[in-house]
Length: 141
Image (cartoon, rainbow, N blue to C red; front, side, top):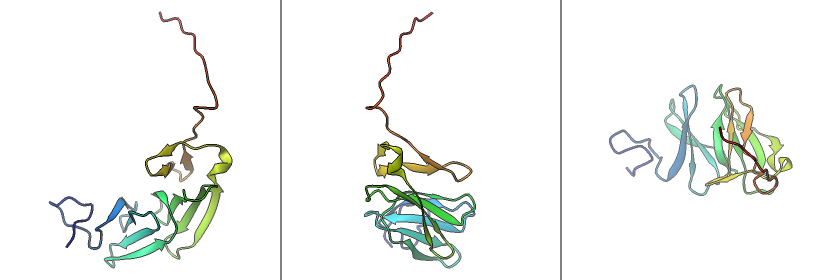
């Protein structure tokens, strides 16, 4: 079996070769991962021991909801940077907000970073480094 992301000293998740960004659901039932082309999110169900497509949308920085019932992600291939939530139970995708409406976001290695706070509220980093310049005069003690 080809190696997945798990070290060679531990059992490998079947079918995980070529996948990255693994993320356990908070309830421990699912494993979320994505292929290298970012074109979809895959879900491994530990009860059935099978991989399934969760969504077939370009995605970056996926995050589990705290109740394990949904996954939040951003589609960085669209100019308006839509942020979505997909329900695990029925794969229904819900558009939540367009992040481009809030100014320029800071870009990370895999696109514009997004995350979730402990209450499932959206976190994003806004880049204002070129738009606001401050001067500081400081007299050290």
